[in-house]
Image (spheres, rainbow, N blue to C red):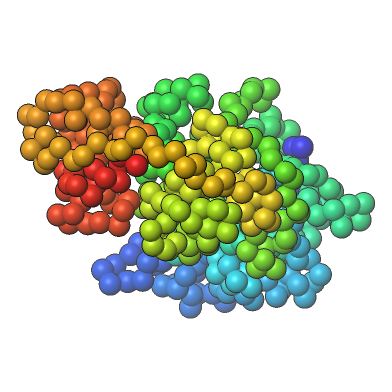
Length: 448
């Protein structure tokens, strides 16, 4: 559904016009830096050199001529209460809504310009991909609607009403219900609708070339949309890659989903902190180190995965986690990329709701013994032997194929070294223990 509304259009246009702005930051200054907005909002001049996401929203409202419809404050928590006091706070998104993040909505804020069944699309001040709520830039962001980080939405009382996905407001005066909606683009006249930006989450073994091909664009075009990708050979499972919007009437390439399993129960609202909401693919995979990895491992152990863990489970993602996830996925009858050992929403839902099939017990038939470590001299510059090929094939099997533009083959190369180093980093090793040259432990883990 496309929306053509004057106050909404003005608000979103002003917000969009600021994308790309970055605050200045002197040496030793806090990450948010100092910016132009505080001094232009009467009453908030003092807020310069402070986190400025809420100040930015106040500035947008002021410039759009709707200052009375948004809270004028530098505090996210005060903003939440401002909307609550007016009976205009919801857990459902709306076009032009002020979205609030974090516990009690007090961590960060932005303005919604579009939403669909799974995501919200926002303009936010003082954010970045590396510092979500204090990153000193104005950016477009895409976030999962059911992410626990999303607290709720303040609904401005636009004169023409507001478009919302809140079913409780369906049919009420001043509200238009839409399960999904795209915000107005361009000037205030009728405009051709465009789809919101899309993102895909990198899965094990994927490359920039493969993602570009699936999206039907060139690698150069894809890289232009993802300026944070400095080296196209170095993307990692869990990374988010931005794709261009689907042209009007076009078909969006569909990623391979996890196969349908038993339907999980409805997801509880984020504010309930039930723990059932999928925390996102970025929480899992090589390099991940967080409490969600521990919880995943514990859930897997309950479902028959204890044999994969010699110790733990713990917060640092390891090969044991990947093997355990893969075993659980295969127990559901999934194959191929749907059983890659990286959990998605369906895997998580089955685990937290105790549905689906348990991991079967290990068969009594012992697998063939892994090849013994052939010695460090087999893996050095200039080495050419079959052990290099075996090593490379194992690295590809474990999700590190992105380092190879061709092969693997018998000649030791920088691609082999970088793949080994990435695997070693994923084990939590550093320094000389992650130099990219396999030793007995690296070899043993790769041959599992």
